[in-house]
Image (tube, rainbow, N blue to C red; front, side, top):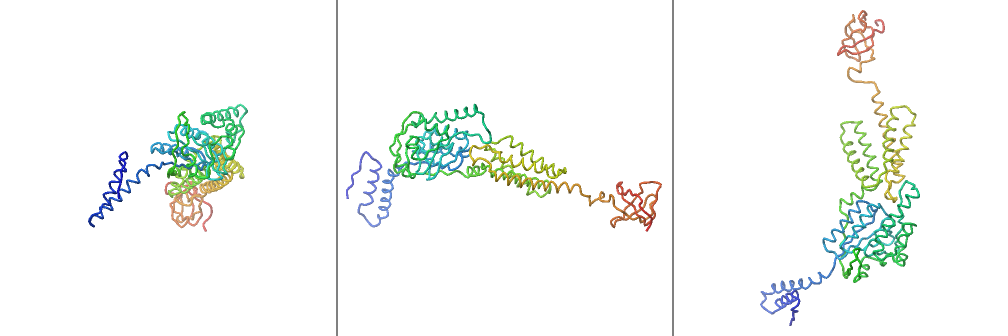
Length: 462
C-alpha cells in the first residue's frame, strides 16, 4: 500500500504518516502499537470534517414579551457572540407583550455581531403585537406553514385615550417599526399597516408582501435554504451565511429565568399576595405559631417581586388598600354587611385592573380577581370578627375575672373579712366603711384592691 501526502496540508500529512507506520508489517508485539497509530490517524482525519460544521444557537420564545424574556434573549445573543456561532435561530411564538421590553430586544438584535434568524414556529404559532416587531427586526425573517403575524396596534389597557394621545402613540410606534423595516429592505407600508390598522398576515401573505424572506417547514430545512445567502446587516455591511450541515445548539432558559417567568404571571402573583396576606393576618391573631407568619411573608415577597416586573396601576393599588380597610371596619362597626360588601367590590375591581398589560396573558383574569377578592374578603372579615368578639368577651382568668361575681361571706365583714367565691377564699372589704355583712350573707364583687376584693352587700344571711 502506498500513500502520497499533500505537502500543503500538514494535518493530512501527519495522519498519513501515522497510517503508514501502523500498517507496516512487523512482529506480533507491534500490533498494539499499530492499532493505536491507526486510531490516532483516524481521529486526526476527522478533525477537518468536524471543523467544517458551523454551530447555530437556538433560542425559544414561546411566551409573553416582558423583562424576564428580554433578559433571556439578550443573554443568548451575548453567548452566541462570545462563542462565535454562525447565526442565532430564535423560534418565536408569542401573543405580544410590553413595548419597553420589545424596544430593548430590538436594540440587541440590531447591535448583535451574529446574524439573527427569527422563525415563527412550529405550525400554528403566531407573532402577535410586539412579536411582529421582533420578526421584522431580524436579519432573516421566516415563518412556518400555518403561522401568522401582525395585529401590532398599541393599546393602553383600561384607558380610553383622547384622539391626540392616540395619534401620538400610533405615530411613535409606527416610526419605531419603520426605523428598522426600511433598513432590512422589507415592505414598509404593509408593516406599518399592522400597527395603524391592526392587520395580521398569514405566512403566504407575508411572503408575497415581502415582510418575510422565506417559508420553511422546520429548522433543518430552513438552515439548508439559507446556506450561502448574503445578508445585509443593520450597520450596512454584508455577510454570507455558511450553514451547510450546521449543528443546532439549543439554549434553554436558566432555572432563575424559568422561576422569574412563572412569578411574572399576574394571576399567580396576585394569588401569592392574597394568600400571604391571610397567613400573616392569621399569625397576628394566633401569635407564636411562627409557621403562618413565615410562609405568609415569603408568599407576599414573591408575589410583590413578580408584580414589580409588570406595569401596575396606582389607582388599583389604592382600591386594594381601601378594600382591606373597609373589610376590617365591618367587623368593628355594625353596618349590616354594607362595609364588607363595598370592600369586597373594591377588592375585586382593584385586583382585576391591577396589572396594566397590553395582552390578556399580561393581565389578571376576571375569574382570578373574583375568586381571590371574594375569598380574601370573606376570610379576613371572619377572622376580624372572631378577634373583635374575643376582645369583648368577659375575662375568665386572673383577678379581673372576679368582677361582678357573687360571693358568700365566710367571716363577718365589719367591714373586712373573708368571702368564698368560685370555691376560693378571698380577703374582702365592704365598699361602705360603716356597713357590715354577717356570715352566710351574699355580696357582689365590685372592684379589686391588690389581693383584697371590694364587695357590696346584697342580702340577708341564708
